[in-house]
Length: 401
Image (tube, rainbow, N blue to C red; front, top):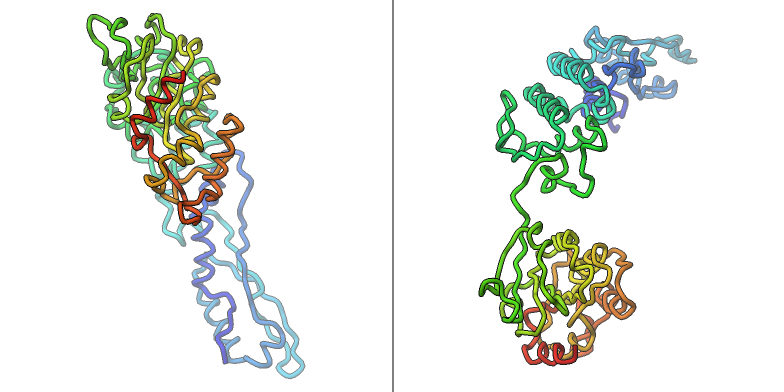
């Protein structure tokens, strides 16, 4: 006979553990939280038929539950069996007090820590209530450092737009590394406690932490090759400068080229009245901070793969007039023997609405693996890297501009 699946004492404890792991037991201790106790646990129990066919197993099951820790409360119901008569069996299990649940799990100390950090947090920043309600376990993980975290929040509230480097912040008990290691967490909290006027929304993520909250960061730099020696700056044609300085550059230009690959950039032919900017993959959005690029014919040269077109699409969110170069069917087919593959798990599969119709056609063919090799076999995750374009093919393209 198979073992009945009636609820065991271990199952009851597992239910409590799941409530802890989901943060529900801590969440119930927040101010204005819905009462959670008395808490009824799920109890799968024998029925009248089981009593007749598995009487000894039912009796052992009842004995097991009756040995439960006294912090569980059993309620019984009577079953009237025609052969066995009236019998009382457990019908429900309750935990009456939150402290009982915490003691059963051995989490009394953790709960006290959580209550202390909640009290300290809401006294200073009532706006953190929603975050603490959503992420109680994340807060508890930082309990030993929560006073320093609150000190960081207080400093930023008191020093908006400080224009200091992170290294310059003078917060007792907090060093640069403390903040660097918790930038993601601090961003979530700062977004709740700071006025909107103290947050620069154009900067996001860990890398944008300093600029988002009014600190100075190491300058973002872009490398540039001047392709016309007549426009050299003090004899220099290959420069790497902060974005802010590049934004103020004034040169009589006819066109700007952007490419990701360094070798391509260094080998790019000289052209009258032209410059070339070295891209940084998805960091090309830095170019959106350079106003004069809005006025210049601009050509982007990337890989012919799904990510190359995704980067082009992203660039157009900042520079909508950007044109692609050498990212077309003819370039791809001309170099068929040099095709490779991009990793399947990183291929872009999303919609790219800023591509032109011809670019969109090629992107869809790449995304759907519809391009075939010389043998007529479809090539999965096709990639043709920009540095494999023949120099003669590049020169022919530039002559047509």
